[in-house]
Amino acid sequence: MPLIPQNLYDRIVSLRRLLHRQPELSGQETGTAAVIADFLRDIGIQCRTNVAGAGVIADIPGIAGVPCIVLRADMDALPIQEETGLDFASARDGVMHACGHDGHTAMLLGAAALLSGEKDLPAPVRLIFQPAEEKGTGAQAMIQAGALVGAGMIFGGHLDRHYYPGAIVVAEGAVNASSDNFAIEIVGQGAHGARPHESIDAVVVGSLMIMALQTIVSREIDPARPSVVSVGQFYAGTAPNVIAGQAKLEGTVRAQDPTVRKQLLTSIRRIAESIAQLHGAKIHVSVKEGTPPLVNTSEMAGLARDAAVTVVGAANVLPLKTANMGAEDFSYYMEKIPGAYVRFGGQVPGKEGFPAHSSKFDFDEEALAVGAAYYRAVAKIAGQRLRDQRSRS
Ligand code: NI
Image (cartoon, rainbow, N blue to C red; front, side, top):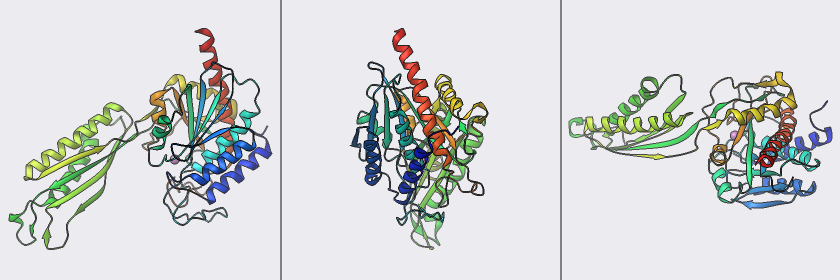
């Protein structure tokens, strides 16, 4: 039995390709929003547009008085020049749907069509089409705009090239890491390259810091708890024969556990301050906190698993193979209400080596049908749970 009607599948595949051809960067998703709103109105679902920028919210009624089930897709693309060679490749220079958010949008529109045909939904369903996920700012903006008012639970998911099409990955515990950025400004003393004794060399101080920061994960954090400290940028100097008086390091910190997250940031500050003091340099450390870790509770993962099993069968509901240290701003919603985040297998044979955020990223479109069917199933199963809770209380 096909997961969704063939004509709906054809329709969401062509929608995905249309969106893929016209990708839009975070905060600029107005054309994408117009495609979404047109589709929703065409199937008889009213929606609100221009929410937190280009966001779209649609409500499908269910039994009155029950909180709604929220289903969320992200909409934005990345500043990457596409090299897939697909016949529906990006028509915009330097912009590409390289994370599958075109697919996420198309599958949620498929779910909208399936749900709009359901009679007697146990709970109302709200669809959130969220802008600016790649910047990590869209979810908070949608929450501030009221996206979770009256909401009981939220569900979302991501395409994943590590798993075959037709598989849904449901895991308990951390499924995405936190992401915080840090910057260390070093102020030493500039001097002539031939007279190092007159300097406090900010390049040497910065280099020692970079090496010492590597020992946080290897020597201070429990190896059983995944974490990352990466220095991505190191700026210093003006000429080969001038010792730099100033330098700046910038990096990112990932963790799956709030305690480890705190420990990483504390250690960075301690190491930077100690090395600066060792060499008589001054420093300023700043941290820009990003998304929290995304953690599925066992209760919510259980609901997601039940829904996934009804769609693809127990044999195709898989555990997470390895810890995922990527960030996902869906975690902000889950700070407010219970929910679960899953992964949809989208592997294309021969393209396993092209990860998300690469110029050759692609996914198998069968995942669109899986995603649409999963969202319908989880809206009904989780909706029933909310309805039962309400009638008990
Ligand atoms: Ni993504």
